[in-house]
Length: 472
Image (cartoon, rainbow, N blue to C red; front, top):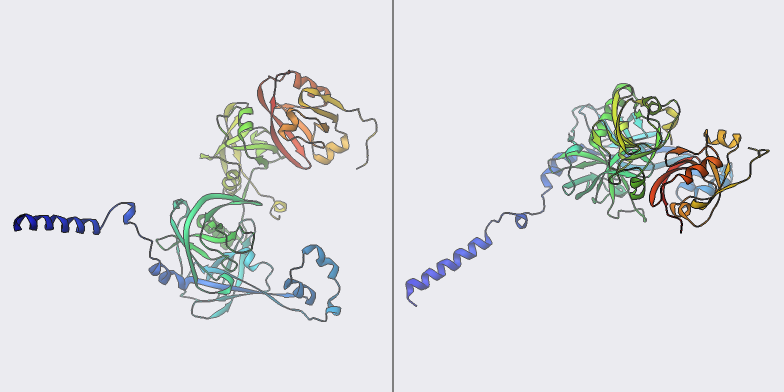
């Protein structure tokens, strides 16, 4: 091989190595984000919040012990025997400054029942805060400290969040101030038990006790959420943390600053999710929407013509895939405003207009035997034995019609989940006035099809799908 050829091969080899080691495009070129600048710029506006609550000696001692709430009443009136004076119970959380003149946003549960609220700034100053207002439904509280020219966070928009993008939290888990943790957005619009009005941002950011009320940032250094809850069997982080969307939070802040309270939209319905069987029984192409199980008397929904058995598939132009979305959408509509709903009723789409009401105050917080009762009657094809409802039972349940299930044998009703003690209110969207009416309805049901049944269990109405099978 000549020197010229050899040199050419060396040149090609070196060029290939440089290309393979040089900058690349595409997924392999991505690196983990650098949060250092974000933290330097935003950390000064994150505060530590501690509260003091004056409690009795007994209560104070019990707070420090793992004593079930059930047993606490046994200790009432025993302060002198414990020989413990009143003392301060402490709790800690996080928050962030949203205005230069001292307004601070945090979780309501961080400062609930507090006699004193103390805010510690990054420069170690400790100031007493005033509670401007709170909203228990969204678990938000607005505080104020008498100070000017304070550092403030940048407020972003939670509507722009996407699943999979990086987010970062700053807070004081277990009392360790200025702690930074990072992760990704795991899901959006997540609903949690007993939380009807917050479409949570789910992340895998490590959130622990003390992080509550702290900010959740995007990579642009903007607050997109308020870290609020974790789902855990141990009390510590297990990969599931939830934040309140900042768009919703800032709407609450505006109302608290202007009125000291939050007015939230209300329809007056009880709803449930739609599964595959119910979807078929209501003539839907797929499981989707919010199924109306009950319309409250004299409610906005009643005035709009909404009926039990309607499936709400959109509200104000926003599609409803799962039932928890409806309270979120209704709650953010100003009371008195008009909204539109698209519903499916008996397989046909229908548009309704509703004037949204205000959530009643009582919803903001969390007889004898009858004579001459008719004997039970059987609806054999379903496997049910039913009896008429007495006037007392109807009044107690707030019902005008229905039959009481006294026995359930193996069959379609049992497979649907109907139990003895349930009240069957409608079947195939027809009112069940009495046992005789139920028999007529059952005889008219089409075979080899799904039909909806509205069942009342205690105070809770619920639709169930029953498969009507051809008799052997």
